[in-house]
Image 1 (spheres, rainbow over the protein chains, first blue to last red):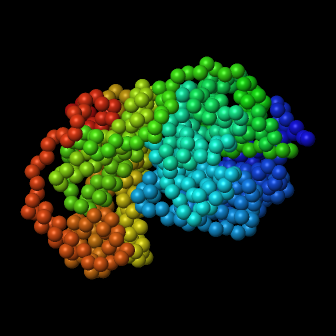
Image 2: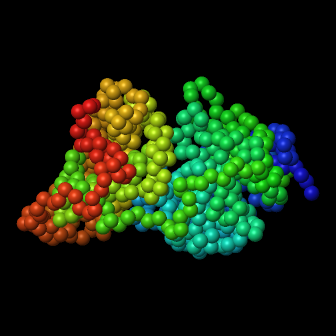
Image 3: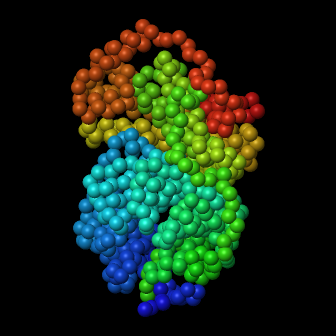
Amino acid sequence: MTDRRRMYLGTEHGILALTGDQDRWEPERTMLEGVQVYKMVAPAGSGILYAHAKDGVHVSSDDGKSWDRVFPSDAFHIAVDPSNPQTLYVGTEPVHLYRTMDAGDSWEELESLAQQPESIRDKWWFPVYPHDSHVKTIYVDPRSGGRVYVGLEHGGILRTDDRGKSWEEVSDGIEYLDIHMVGGDPAQENVVYAATARGFYRSDDYGHDWILAEEGLDRDDFHAFAAQPGERTSLFLTATRGTPPAWVRPSGAEGAVFRSEDSGLTWQQLGGGLPEKLRRAPEFLAVDPRDEARLYVSASDHQERLPEGVQAGGEVWVTADRGTTWSQVYEVEQPVRILCVGLA
Amino acid sequence: MSMEARSSPHGTTSVAWRPPSDEELTWFPARGRLTTRPRPLEYTLTVQAFLYGVTHALESLRFPLYELRARLIDGQLYLASVPSGMAERDLETRMRSMRDSTLRFSRNIGAAWRREVRAEVAGYNDRMAAFPPTAAALPELAEELFTLKRLRANQWFASVRAVIAPFALLLEGIGESAPEDALAVFEDMRTLVIDQGTAAFDGAVQRVAECLVQAGSLDQPEDVEWLEYEEVQEALRSGGRYQATVVDRRAKAERDPGPPGPDRVGPLLPSDAPRMYLLREVLDLIAGELPARA
């Protein structure tokens, strides 16, 4: 069994692939050179890589040596059906959702999402010009391929139980509908979590009602999380103090990583090498494909939030003991837009 | 190892938060930019676009409110500030976040306006002036009307977020902009949004009304003022005659304009209630009423 991993860092100029183990990582090659990449997915054991970039969605079946552009227009988020790596969902701005079931050869739009009544679409908006909402997160429940949650930035959460034929808005309880990530509990199908720009929420009824789950959290803008099985579900969560406009302050994003050992009821900020306030924003988190005690977090500057003349950069932190100790294993002179880890 | 667990004022709620109902809120009469007794289309389109823009602007700057809501009471327009559950649970953090979030504008209102916002705000006037798209069929116009509403809302959003709210903060001593520069930006914004923007928006609505006259739904373009936004959309989608509704509503309004309403409807609200933070000042600025200290 290999201990080697491949880490993919998305940058403004392509995907930087690194290989390494825990503490030592070496650049291997740059993929999709010159392309601004936003997200990448490497379904375990499939040999397939999906990347979505400014110019569309790209797929590789040879470890990133060659890529085909399979979705030609701007995408905002992609997610693979965990039960079938050939099935990929693509969300866009303005809000539309597409699906391929053959790794990108053919696509269908799940039209009923974009055709919601105006009373629902009225909530779909974004503070940045042109003020169109986008699909920020897609969660495909591995226990039920028909159940998919879509989170909109801004606009709330919608859920389908019938593979996208019909959708129900499920945002009750979330005060500010700036959704960053939605994900399910590995042990309880009815329990879902949502990281938003103003709070971290838990739902016990498939998203119908959301309650704040913030005991121990002292940040207010939440980005990525991972839920891991156990006697009680463990959650790892990245957060910043305030949204990007606030990161112009000298202390930057004041980022932090938190862990909950009780399905989000209580939280502890993780130290063990991680600064109490990361200046760069820890927006991405990845779980090792083979060792669930190992997690990766990337933190980045936002160029527009830095003083003139200061170059934005990014850094990667790794823990091998479920967040107890951390080490910074890589730094890059570009913001890291994505973080994805697979087997080398 | 973990850092010490901290208690959070946010904590864990046991039930899902829901915004208060109309009956729980404190309502005050609208004035300034908003008509006291709006006709149906003004209430359901113009006022709603205004509220959408102002609400999103203040929310995005983390002012401690959930939304600005409107209601007609005996035909008179009232507004209420809806409290934010999150802000009221931890007001100190919210106010700190508000100061951080407004920095990009309040540090230098003029620079932010000229660099980031002015072109966007002016662009909405161009788009409203070109509304409706000449190629749009009537049913498509129904959807385009949503776009028009959003254009005007976004114009309010951009100008309240970048100019009016930071200006109100500056008058409170929060921010670093030069007052004379802020005042010049405010005047520029007023010309673009309140003078030109209002004319461009009204002109766009007038052209939609002319389409309804041509289609036979109305007799005169000005009759459209007596229809609600959704009725205008339905008329565009499905045709049909709406003149009887217009005549009925107009006659009722002329017959019974209604007495002036009270200065407050609902429970007494302390003047320092978090939800009201700088709200009257923001609305006054939108109305063009500069405080004496400006």
